[in-house]
Length: 427
Picture 1 (spheres, rainbow, N blue to C red):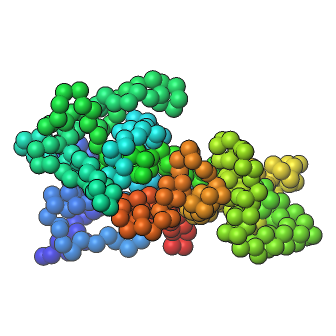
Picture 2 (picture 1 turned 180 degrees about the vertical axis):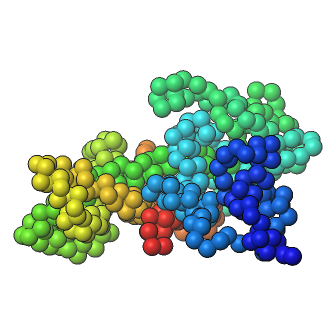
């Protein structure tokens, strides 16, 4: 007799048998059946194969019940977690923004520290050895008396010992908290005299003997914050103008859409260059920063406005919007209280895909000398040193800021693609 026939001929209902098997010490008690324990129950009964539920039992699996009880944001988060590139990109962005937020602590040096004996010094990559522990090779500068070219050598008997939470140059965290501890830095040098301050440039030095790695981290604070401030302005303009266009309709919608089309007809880069050149040359670094942010935002809100307008057109005649209108709610309340929250996920996706364009816009303007200017440190300003092809050919590490730009832009694109797929209910 098979297990399936045994179940059919047994007068005791199969649900009761499952409850008893699930809780052997509580026979006769009412124990709720839980589908997640089905495998253990079948193992006790010996029905590991051939067991089928009677038709019409109406039972559903635990994963199905779990998904059915999730909210929209929980479903988006679950689908987003399955997108590997998106999760990797999100971790990279979190690391970059955390480094930019605590840059004074993370960077080994301040962006203005100079060592003339380390002009265009090569990268000093960390190593681990039995003699020196965690260390980096010490480099010594030699000037060719004929060509006057600087050549660096790494003596075998000299090394820069590294450590964590070491004392270094004093600074003020966020301009408020005085401290002198750095996440990682040199703690001493072997093979040198006492009192000699060792120098460790992880990614090499620039033309003035400044640490390129520290300057890249300080530049990340400016370049990454430009994108965040820019999308905040684009968000306000896109939501307001796009919402009015979709909710009002008629001539107002036509006028706004024609204006957006005219604005999109201009090539973005020449328009950015023209607006950047219009900024006064005597402005302070703070004014130039906000001026560049506004310039980038003037071209970044049109895409979001069209997304908002299309969603509002589809939702403004829904029953809940009509009910709010009949109850006396104003147009502004219906638009921003009832309609806009219905497609928040699409807005987030659109904003995420807009940030890389703003970062590249700031980099382009600063690289061409029409955006941020020294002594302000940004990724575009750092790339100004690469305009000379001879410098790039002799000191290729000066192009390393470009690697961070590409990494951040790709991470934002991966995160945007993951959010777009996660927010799509038909995906």
